[in-house]
Length: 217
Image 1: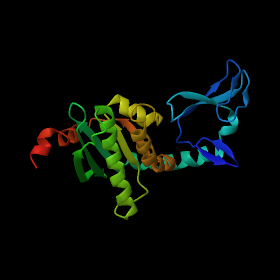
Image 2: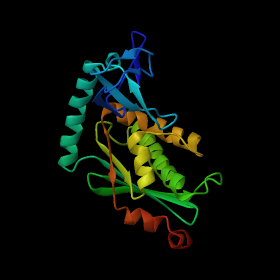
Image 3: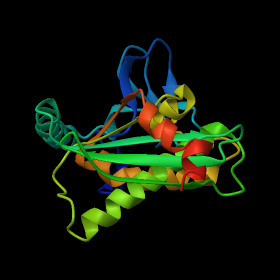
Image 4: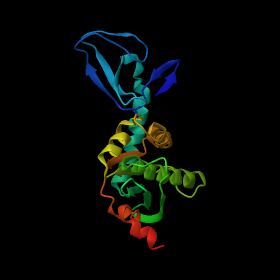
């Protein structure tokens, strides 16, 4: 969310949906009344992962319209096969290893793998860590002018729990600090409409994160 004239408004990259009130409610953002029969918005609160309620004053149509225009341009590029794809995965009983592979316009341009920090000892946050490493690499390459900054960026996971985190931007859970860091790293891409998320078959990254791939080096 962003503030305009001291009012929190949704960015189009936020997760929210319009519904009609069947009962009276209170807005979780400003405390205003939501009367029965009027439209309001349900949104995902990042800190808790819970769905909350917001009144109509928190939707700025100009902000949403600008986002949709940018989003359409990036979607068209993506359909033409242009853009960045970040293939990521983790491996090991507790996600001890991570890997990512970067594709530019369908061609591999970079790959990296490493060992997951010791404080992460479960496969789901380990796969999230692989996404974090990939987006950090991409951000640095864009900062250095090595990769264009007007391209769609596609990421995903073959892990439903990770996919859900990426989709809702929820940071709740045992590894909250880790998910917060990932969501912050992805935020600039979301705001620009460049980020595309979906279920992917990441078999190449899976092999690159395997024990055999590490032992062969």
